[in-house]
Image 1 (cartoon, helix red, strand yellow):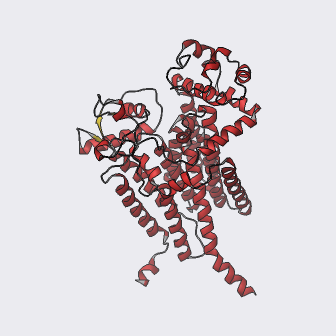
Image 2 (spheres, one colour):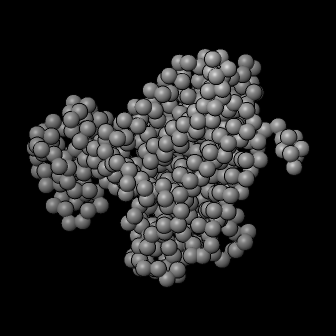
Image 3 (tube, helix red, strand yellow):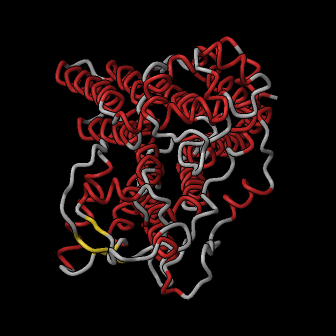
Length: 492
């Protein structure tokens, strides 16, 4: 046995495979073994299903059965209807539909989509464990890789994240994109000669993040900057052309997402930004409206959201659209907050209060056939999400402090390391932090306080990646401690 382990040059490879196997078993058990776990539709599924060839199994299903209370395992196959929704997420859902057709032409089983997400999650986990930075020796490196793998599974394999895998929301698509982008960037920075395949994986994952939903589109520019920093990892022209092509793809994809957003969606979000954002809980509604140039007759809409019924003036009123929604833009909202930083901090405090819930607790996790009460939530392997939601501080000061310490630590790391690959690791984690900052600011400016908990999903992902990084760094410090003590004792 000792000889067998002695032949293994790098323990990280078997650890990575063991981690993948363990995570796959855990996720399959949690999600796919009856009672099947998913997330109920809140009305967003239709725009993805229609473009992906999926349709409701029962077109006459009641509102109460279709939305909010129960998730669905079985669907019908439908046509591929273009509905103006632009996202590469559609291709993954369509792919799961094509795979499902191999096994059944009658009904689509959402567990095939869950299997696709599990495969992507497993790929990211493998890369993170396999390319964990080396410690002081083979055994300590093996321990470090094991710690990283366990942290990733404990936090991102939590049912709060995993339940999304069997839904048509864009959140799980952004999550696996984020994990794959970071994992492939670390693999690129660790490999002696990074390959075009790893670069393609990084670009594809970053594009998935940027195109998962409109509010994530600006994140593509941040990842394009990180891709540009990879240019110097190889001196050959082929690599430079590949990197440049990847940068162009990310920039073009982000711009396309922003430009191609349907006017209807832009108007919806702008309404939320104004009436359910700036004017919600405003100390001076009339003054804010004058500053924005909004006629005072619309003061009755302050504090209302776009989907609220029985408002004094209908949200789809053509005059409202002409006098407000087509005249203002999100740029005006951003400028308002720049002029009133205190008001913006107030909104950030509300976001922080909602920024620790990974999952939407108002959406049920079980199919009606499971026999559970409407809206029942699954709690298997939910230690991290429940601790965050119920025990962790939910204040702006807490989050700001964690981000400040993390960014300062990265700055010191970057300054002390002169080699390009070590700095790329620090820059990758800096992009994670930047993603979190953008993910808490963009929803406030772009959609007001509407469904803040769900819109802060990427903020949760970023924060949890920071937690994994901090804990992994602490583990490295403890592993190096005996060697440092031994070196000092020898000198003494």
